[in-house]
Image (cartoon, rainbow, N blue to C red; front, top):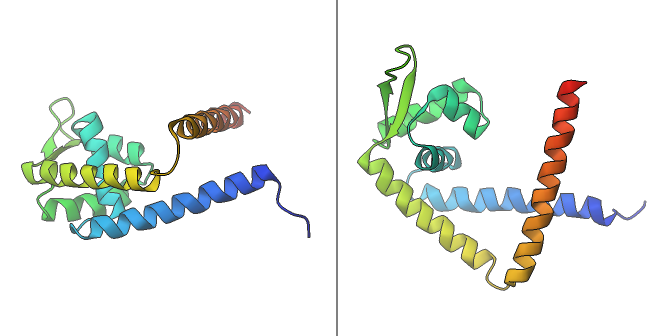
Length: 151
């Protein structure tokens, strides 16, 4: 059996790291009664403001029926509220409540602290180099995805 190439190792390590990070973060936010999906929704709403359910589903890259279940739970926790969209009465815009904003701020601070702890012994230069590589990989992937759509 041949050894994995460095490129294969890079992708395997990135995938493994992502799974571990998601699991670790999910465990941390569970302390606040959240799931990873609910926390991601709060982050998206804080970045982009009130979104329609469709926009939020696209932002989170999940199906709308899956999002509806997430939003139902968040509404029960008083983290969000659905309001009619003035431009389209059929659509609902998702707004964070004051409790949702407070919860977001707490989770955001946790995420910031986690990132600092995880990267504590990595130099700024190494972080910059890794960021450049990941950005180039993302751009290459985006280009490949665009080629597939055009084919």
